[in-house]
Structures are given as structure tokens and as C-alpha cells.
Length: 258
Image 1 (spheres, helix red, strand yellow):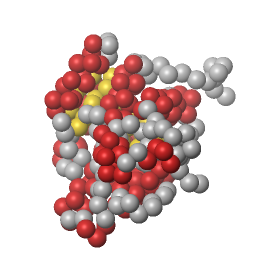
Image 2 (tube, helix red, strand yellow):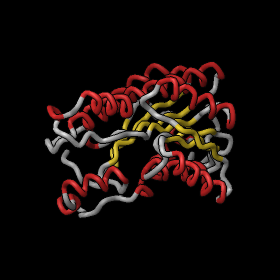
Image 3 (tube, helix red, strand yellow):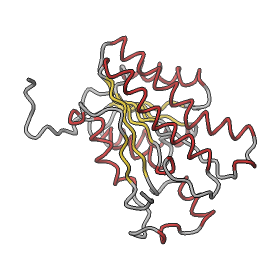
Image 4 (cartoon, one colour):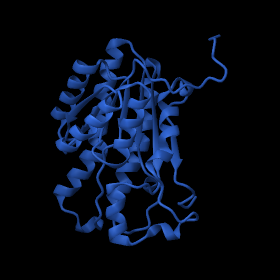
């Protein structure tokens, strides 16, 4: 039997290399900062390069090691190149956080084919390609890894306000998590998901602008702060969750129906 510490809990990510997508705002920015603060070298990625550079400066100022990488999740070649750059500058990616996502914010029958492609590619196809590319390199290096895919409580409930495709793709992320966890368990690659409720972000700001203050319908009448996901993220990438793979954790503050 392994000699586990008592308790078997640690947030020390020294020696780990993390790649986080969608880090130019909201949840992704916070995820990158948290992982860096725990000692991981972090590749931050997104389409808005000026924001990437600003975040990189913040992380460096706090003593972290970071590599900003321009990434469009709709472009498969760009995804592969991103992983290549992260590995070249920081080392083999051992932690992947698939956070990038866009809303549809339209009725299904009114969406253009271009928007449909953008949502599918950013929210589901891109994360699948990225996960496979990271896994390929981990398997070749015979190195264990952790993947955390960001879904949404919208994956489990849709009340018809005009976000059907978002709900579909986020549900797909949960199933992707379950399937890839089975496929890669033998290689010690853990794949899990977080399904947030209403958390402060640019996407949430857009929803509040369209729909008004939805928080007044929640039991606690509040929009959550990304910091309230720190402990769950760290649990899923830390040694403590070594036996946890293929599951999802809802963090919705009691907001949604059950």
C-alpha cells in the first residue's frame, strides 16, 4: 500500500505545467492565477492578445512562470501549435483546463450556420481536439495528467430563453469527460468536469444585460464569485483526487432546479 500523508491533501503544484484556455477574462483568468499561485508553470491562452499579455505581467509580478499563447479554439492547427509552444517553453502539459466557451444567445431557429459552427467548435470540438493532443503527449512521455473541463448547469436544465446550443454543447462536455476518462484511465490521466452556475464573468454580464437581474430568483439572491471555485479546481488537479476521474461537480450555490 502507498504511504499516504495524513490528511492526503496538498495544493502544491510545483513541477506541474498547466494550460488554461479562455484566460482573457472571468473564470479562465482566475483559474490561471490560482494554478500559478500554487506553483504550476502556466500557459495562458485566448484570442485577445493584449489581455493575455496583461495577465502574464500580473502573474510574473506575483512570482509565477507564465507563457501567453494566442489561441482560437475554432482552428485545429492553432490548437496543436498552442500545445507545441506550451511544451517547448514550459515542458509537457500535465494539467489542462478546458475553459474557453461562447454563448449562442439566440433562438435555435434564428441562428446562422456561421454562429452554429462557432459555438460547436469553441465549446465542444476544440476542447476535444485539445484534450486529445495533450493526452497524446502525456502518453508518449509516460506521465500522468489531469484535465478539468468547464461545463455549466445549463447542461442539465434549459428553460427556453435562447441558449439551446450552449446547453447542448455543455452537455456534450460532460459526456466527453466521462468517455475520455474511461479511455485514458490506464495512462493515469484523470478527466473531470466542473459545472458552474451563475458566476461573475463577461458572459454573465451579457446575460444580465439581456435578461435583467436573474439573481433575484435564486435562493441566495446572488451571482457567485469565481474565487468560490478555487477549492474545487485545486482538488481536481491535486494529488488528493488521484482516484477521481470521469465525474462532474456542480457548483451552483443552490441556484438551479434538481
